[in-house]
Amino acid sequence: MSLVELALYFGLLSLISVGGMPSVMPEMQRFVVDVKGWLTPAEFIQAFAVGQAAPGPNVLIASLIGWNVAGLAGAFVALGAMCFPAAVVAWYVAELWDRFKDSPWRLAVQRAIAPIVVAMILSGGFVLATPESPDWRLWLIAGASVAGMLASKLNPLWLLAGGAIFGAVLL
Amino acid sequence: MNVTQVSPPKNLGELFIGFLWIGARSFGGVLPWAYRTMVEERRWMTGADFTETIGLCQFLPGPNIGNASIVLGKRWFGVRGSIVAFLGLMAAPFVWVLVLYVLYVDFAATNATLRAVVTGVGAAGAGLFIGTAVKLGRPLAKRPVALVLIAACFLCVAVARFSLVIVIPVGLAIALLAARKNWL
Image (cartoon, rainbow over the protein chains, first blue to last red):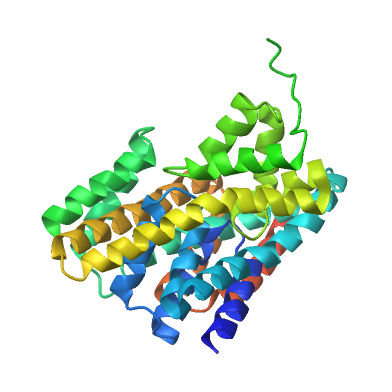
């Protein structure tokens, strides 16, 4: 039963994930933690952290949630459901997109999506840095990595490593 | 050497190995490795072509780089190409993330420091999201309507915790109207 729920829900998320995985992180957290209780808030941020630190596309957080819900089958189903509907859309739209290169609607769509994507990614960051009640130490670590990212061209891995050190000292 | 001279992968095996190689070493984000592998090392495509493809995939729903594997696989070998490129891309990272996670869960049960370290990494990762939003948002900052839209969506999703299933379609519809009126 959980497998079916997982497939349907992640399939739905797949279709609305404009801007990629960061956009749907707040929704995923809401559903997986608040609605379903499959993971605790702390477990969710830790699964996210492992997904970020491991090499690979960040969509793999889906397979970690699936793993928690239903083991290896859950991992496959969650990843597949998160990728497949969007892949079908990409398959068909890739051609249309080229054909409407100069259409005013294509430009409108591009401009309309930008602020929505920015808002969703911002929300994702906020929700992940606030897993339970606001904790200044998590906000401090997140703030430091924002500053590091905007002020330098460091590889993000160094900022994650900084978060690891801050975490060991502060938390 | 002529930098514009590119040759797409010759067969499905080459396509698979290329994407496997991208996924296998993609520490710190797949995008730079995809660029390095496909544009610089294997010269499957030009840099401009790469940027345009990624731009399209950022606009589409779904994992950006996953979509890129679908679009490029299709371009070179049709539906078999899409499947092969996607599987190549995901194979190694899928195994690695699960192994890492299982190890982590095993050790974290007894080790508070490890839990703190990983939570710290998570918070830093959250910061990377916020930093990305700031970078993407900078060009929009001159448009008041865009800022209002961003603030409204943020309040709905992050503070009020409304479902994205509602917020995305409604937000997009409003944004599309605004874009057609040249407010965005």
